Image (cartoon, rainbow, N blue to C red; front, side, top):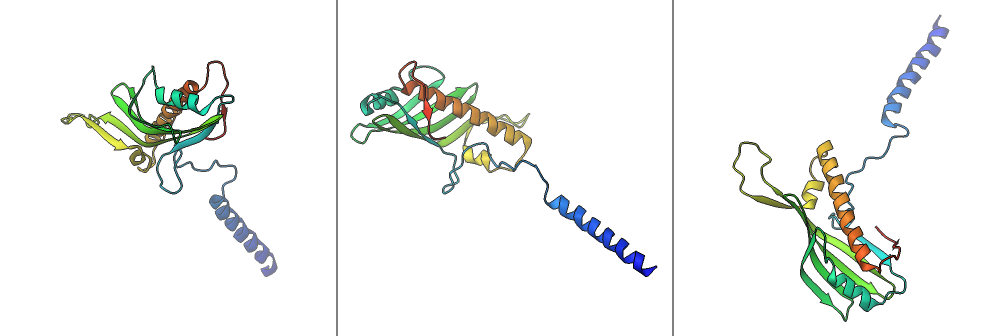
Length: 190
C-alpha cells in the first residue's frame, strides 16, 4: 500500500507545482504598454522624432516650407526662430480642440533631399471644471508627462491614445506641407 501512495503524492505535488507555475508565466499574453506616446529613454519625456526624405528638394526650399508652416488649419505657430546658415527652424506649435489646447516645440533640421524633426516640450491645457460644484479658476496647463506618469487606468490609457492620435495628425499635416503636392512621403523614423 505504501508503494501506491508515493506515486499518487508525487502526481499531486507535480500537479500543484504545474498549476502555480502556469499562473506565473502566461502564454500568448500581449506585453504591457506603459504609454502609447514615445518616451525618450534618457530624459523620460515625450518626444516625437524622425527623419523624412524629400527627393529632389533643396535644403533652402525645405527650410522655407518649414518656416512657413502652418499656413492654415487648426494649428498656430509662434516664437519662430530660423537659422538659415545652420538649416534649422524652431516653432512653438499650438493645437486648439474645443477648450483644450495642446502645445509643443517643433524643431526641424533640413538637408539636401530630406529633413529631421523633433516635437518636444509638450503641454496639455484644459479647463479646471473636473470637480462638479467647485469654483473653476480657469485653465490648467500641465506637462504631458504628468498624465503619462499617473496611475494607470482605462481613462488614462484612452486619453493618451487620443493625444497620440492628435499629435500624429499634427505631424502628418506638417509632413504634407513640407513636400510638393502629389509627392509621396517616405518615412524613415517615428
